[in-house]
Image (cartoon, rainbow, N blue to C red; front, side, top):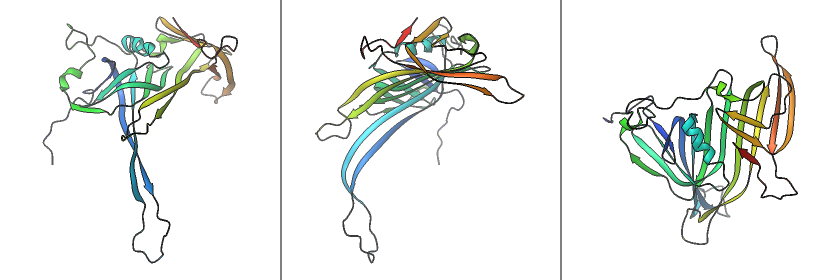
Length: 266
């Protein structure tokens, strides 16, 4: 039995580097990879036979945050489009919060489609453990900026603030190779995270045959360097238009090398 009062609805919030975003969902996950041993002899007459704990093993904490895009959160996401960028994420339900600091992004996705809002998601990993605490529910009533207390100062961006010529829907995905490295010491958390290559992929659905490698959102735009890796034309029946689609994947120029820029942000 509990007598605690809980705040439902939009009592919660999400933060990227202390910048509040319009959270739609999120989670902090900790995986404990415990080391087990199995006995060589498994006798048919034994009442119980199971694996045995050998060592504490390793631990890894990840976090994901899903949100609707605003001008402020767009600027914050754009600041993360740098390889090995370090940042903090907090999610809360208006009563309790979970924070993961010093994160590296595994994946950042932005997408827009006709009839909806522009949405974003971030998946990240850290060598640190999550910090859980209680919070004041009142601070998450609105996304606001002083002195406009209680007044919404940010509005979600609709799909028509984004796109390119004849674009019906689009998804821009950044993937970064983040691997935990565990040291030969008495501890379960990784000693550090190894960040290797990163890349971008743009998936676009258009009304006419196009080959876009760039997307605009509000007054900002991204242009990828690379190649179209897939394309298609699809007719979905008499209640819909025929649609063109293509996937554009980033790649560095071999004459410059792997350190060449693969995305230009304006």
